[in-house]
Length: 210
Image (cartoon, rainbow, N blue to C red; front, top):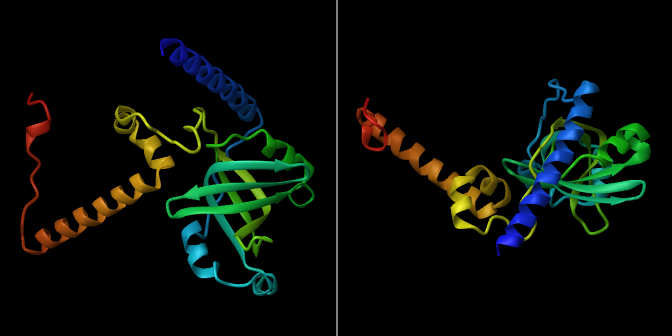
């Protein structure tokens, strides 16, 4: 078990080193633009346009700008599919080399799952009927240095799930749902008590007293 853990740690360290090397090259090239502004969320697009037919979407020419973390990547020669995830859900992006430019496409191929991207493009339906965005522009906004947890199992170590809650929130739909529900409950209770004139006081129960 110890040997497996050491091999896993060694492999992760190599991945982190590789990503840091990529980060160094990106810094030289003035990467990470801060002028990208999204105008849509993945979940909102799926709710608003998920049931529309492909022909109607092609006719309407709906251009959107989304930003999110790349959760999956599938390269197929001159075109690729990725999934990006924001606070509302995931949406598929279709990237063609000839559409975004050869230079950008080559750069995209070196980006890693976990990186945060900005995408602008038109909505369309794939042959399987999945709502997607045909990228006209794609930009790397934030470089992720640590590799994502294994795709299908996520974080299985309960202690790690608590200690690295930020990672668990990225990979687990159920964890995000629980925290969203918790936030709504706390907001409702706080609003109700505030309306009744209650005063919120934090006690030092979980904090050291100086």
